[in-house]
Structures are given as structure tokens and as C-alpha cells.
Length: 112
Length: 421
Figure 1 (tube, chains in turn brown, blue):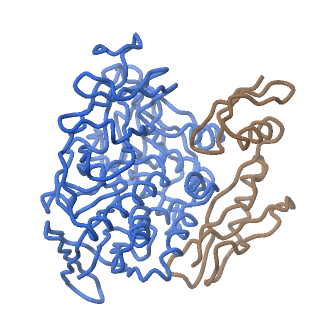
Figure 2 (cartoon, rainbow over the protein chains, first blue to last red):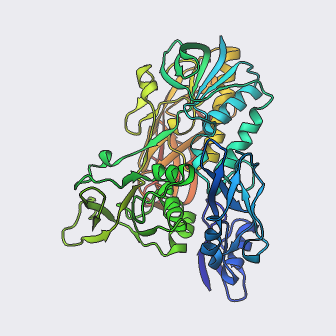
Figure 3 (cartoon, one colour):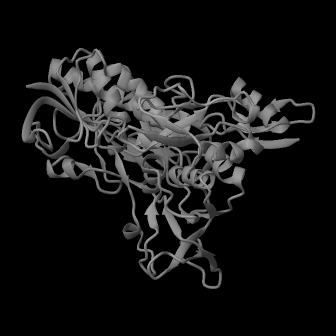
């Protein structure tokens, strides 16, 4: 039995996951999926910034387009140090493709 | 003359302007102090926005963009880099900006959406030396996410509000070591999900019932000393823990930014610094409306959006139909209630339901929220858990509201009863 606080939304439901992967305490389907995933292989969305040239501001916000394995978070962050964008960029553009061969990408979250 | 001037281009101002336009107003102007619309959302690059409004998880800039896109084609005008110096009860707005200099604008209605700002070290009276390296969590967030500077490498965070928690993770991801998050209360004021994904994910210890009692450093911060506090929140001698660090981030509460409102003579709740509003989000001055954190500090941008859409619609109604009359019923904070909005209700002013927003002043488990008038219970709402960190909402049908007098919102007694039942 594992007890978790769900991080899918701000409600923060208290989840219990038993040994046969049954999730209780969730208020939605996303919470059920999260609880199971968190026990098997925890994943997180990363949000950060990268350098941008030619814009009024020096940093462009980015996020992973899907959750990435938790143990890869710091390695993925390191890769962003080498990324430099040039304005104009649009929200949704790729900032870095196929992070650490996970097929997860960093995408721009602000047009600038 | 303009129909409506919205002061502030953050989540509240954007939603209010869009909503006022949808409800028929044509000549709307948004005035924004910063270089671009979006307000503080621009530096909130983390995700978690939009789950209520858009049913998907967005980052701050993405959430702002939804509304900025919506403005296109509406004819709503925007002035950025523009500072409002003064507003008057006659709904004049004195502004200054680099391209037009000083101007006085006039509108049929105003909507105040200035948001809030962070409490600083000065507001807390933390003893100790005054070195560099002590800043608010929001200021650090701007340095990191917009300016591209890391303000420190070894960090202690005072206060466990959401901005502090988010910055604990952000600083860690950028290579800083966050040594501790220190909270004076026995519970965190941040969302549970942020405790999990911002502190526990990175093994950052959370010291509850602790506070900073000394600050050491000649030019730059060198050490922070924290102590355990007793029930009266007084530091207990002998419980000191010392942290060698170069940065102290403060996430110790937000204060509605109401200097303009005060100068215009608009009624303010001096306990929270928030504006006093009617159920239609109108302030004590007819035709001046308000929404978002300038009224009361919200937990989520989504809730700011909801409230601001309502305020924008009510401002449109005022411009089109004039001031609504009606007897005023006052709302009163009863047992367990720390803050309550709206402060006043005009029963005849509109149809439908009235939404009450409140925060409890201590934690409660398995208690009911009671709305009563003249010792008569109007409604009861069961709640499993209520904590001061989370704003609660209950709705009451307008038909239940008495003609005049007062309405009290309170938490039931420990025995489950109501002394007046």
C-alpha cells in the first residue's frame, strides 16, 4: 500500500495505491492514472527558460510537451544550457527535440 | 468618453475587459504599467494554470496568451508602459507614459485590477544585520525567469506560500542548493501538490513552527538562524538551527495594491488591505468595480479569472443600465472566518446566486459552514477539511437573503452544533 498526494491539479487528493495497483481516494481519472504511474515510474513536466536573442527579454520560457522520467530531470535541464533561440519564436515551436532519446521535446511557451 | 477603463493588464484585467466586451461594451481601454500584457503570469513559467477554465494544464505565459489572443478583433485598446498616477470618484484616470506624457482620461466606469504585491522583510521586522541577498520570492522569480540571473547559490526560504515553494524547485533546477523552507505556522499555506512536487521531489526539508530569528552578514548574507516557535508564535530559546547561505527568499504573504483606491476615497478593509465590495464587485464608489487580488488574494489564477469575468459583466451592466438601487445587507465574519467577500449584498441588484468566498483562520476537519441571519440558519455546507491556505467558496440563492440587516458566515462549533439552533 502506497499513500500519495496527487499533483495532477490543485485539489491535492490523498491517494492510496494497493499492491494490485488499485487507486482509491482520487476524484478524477487523471488522478487514478497519476497514482499508478507514480508507483511504477514517476514522471514530471519540466518548465524552465532558455536564452533568446533579438527579443526585448533575455529568457524564453519552455516546457516538456509530455512528462519525463523523474531521474532524467537534472540531465534534461543541463541540455537547456546549450539552447539559444532567435526571435521571433511562437508558442509551441520546438526548443529542443527528443530529449535524451525519450521522444519528449522542449517546446516554447511564449511567442516572443 | 470611454465606456470602461480597466487598470491593470494581468489575469484580472484581461478577463474583466474580455467579459465587459462580451456583455456589450465597445469603448474599453486596458492600462498596464509593464511593457506587455499578462502581468505576473509572464514570470510564472511553471504549469498548473487553466485546469478550471480551459480544462487543460497551461503555464503562466500560455494562460495569459489565451486572453491576449481573445482581445484581438474586439477593438479593446491597450496602453502599456503606462502608469496610473491617480483616479477620482468622478472616474477620471490620470496617467503618464513616455509617448504621451501626462494625460487625464475619463470613463463611464472603472475596473480596478491592480493585483497585489509581496510583503517584504520590513513588514516582518526580522532582527539582524542588513546584508544583500534578502529578497522576495517573486523578485527572485523575475530575476531567474525573465532577466536570466540566478540570485544566489545557497538558499533558505522563509514562508511556505506557493510562490516560495515554486521558487524552491526553480532555484534547485537552476543549480542552487535550497537548504530549508521555514514556516512559522504549524501548517503550510501552500497547496499540497506544491509541497510534494517542489519540496519532497528534491528532498528540501520543511520546518513547520519555525521562523528566522537572526540574520548575519557584512555585505552579502552569510548565515540565517531559525528557531522553533511556541503556540504564541514566540521563538523558543535553545532551539536555534544555523544555515550557511547567501540568499534568503521571503514568501510571507501578499498585500492588495490599493494606494490609488485609498487616494480616491474608496473603502478598504484595513485588515487585509483589500477593497470592500458589493456582490456585483462594485466598490463603495458607484461605477468603480474591482476584481482579482486587489480585492482579496486568490489561490489560483483560474479563480481570479472567474471573479473578473463576473466583475466585467457587472461593469457592463452599470454602463448600460445605470446604478442598481436596493437595500444593503452586510456580511459578517463569524467564528472561524478570517476573511470574507463580498462585504455587502444588494438583494434586488441582480438575479441568480450569490457566491461567498472566505478563508478560515485555523484548520478545521469535518465541520460545516453555516450562513445565518437573525439567528436563523439559511444554509449549511459540509466540508471534510478547511485550511487557512485555501480559499473556500459557498453559494446561496438570492431568495434566501433577508431584506436588510446582516448575514453571518461561520464555522459550526466542535460538537457539530450551532449555539443558536
